[in-house]
Image (cartoon, rainbow, N blue to C red; front, side, top):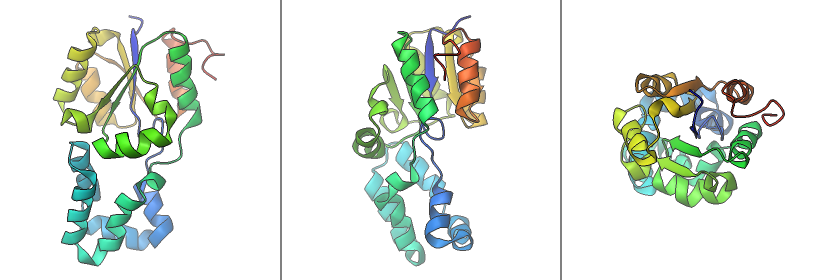
Length: 207
């Protein structure tokens, strides 16, 4: 079935998201490894992605680990440096699809404040989706089934007519189990090739 709508993850698909790389540059790999072994920073981020207040969650975590307080607060104060840079070829694909009149959605684990107040003003393409399904607003995260159910109910499109790309296999596997067409994102060229294969873009469109 030719897809009727295309769904993009955002982190590591449209925008690089590499907190470990940021901290390696700031405090050195050894110290970063020690911090991540002590503090569940990705768990903290999941709490934000579920709708927790960004400032409150990060500051509360920093206060629980005074030996790492300054470093943890960087997650809040310098977040935009972690969520960078954009992936230009992926952005071009998003815009090429929309230029063809193909509905393009986002399905992303993203906090309310980090998406609405920080990322969207900085990255104009984040306002270009036909629909943006943001976990912080939805109070559930990938790969939990509920977030996929909510997308299906809202868009009203047959799951078999959705094509979804994400960089995490667990997120892809859940979508596939619901009948969605999927593509594990490992780089924009592979995703471009898949969109051409699906008949949504020409090779020229997908450059």
